[in-house]
Length: 258
Image 1 (tube, rainbow, N blue to C red):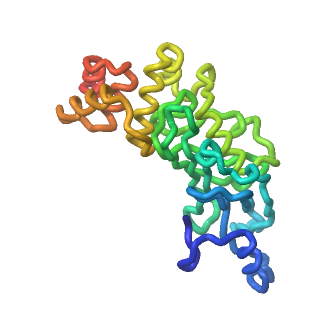
Image 2: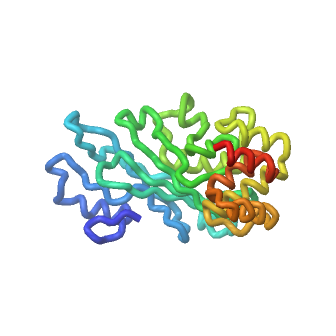
């Protein structure tokens, strides 16, 4: 989590106390926390600081603070405890954030943690943040190359009342319920529709390799190791085998052609 002056990000209450007698007279409120929902804990609520430009000289100030809805009474069930999200500052310009979501239970992504790049435009919250996956993922609605996301609320279905929490929870929901007929990655979507079991095994392997999920298919892992032993780059091997239905011969041809 981003630290300020060597101290961890503060709770909302501590942050509010620290505001008293400080930068308010200058019209600038120091931002201490964005989304208090750390991994491994189950708070009853999280607080989000929405940042928008307030001065045309490029100064960003915090002018809107909103307490989010309760995340259940105690969030103690195993399924709920895995439903974790968090947001940290990347630097002090307040326009770039780093998000993280947990792979939803009962999906190929379970056990993985996915890093997100979040860029806040000057017109936020009237326009959506720009979000992409930093962690590589095999999903019909997310580019396996760039991490670009096909999700309506990040485009024309965005509303100013939505929050960063809305975005992160919507992305978790997308991982649990793909929309292959509106794909961002056509190769993944085709596999999803034509061979669902292969898709699940492939997505689980990507979750293991890139997001730290538990070990996946030994058969697929062996194919990867065999091609890597021939001198090919590991990431390139994974992409080639995944896109060629784990056929070693056609994957090798693709690797040689590149």
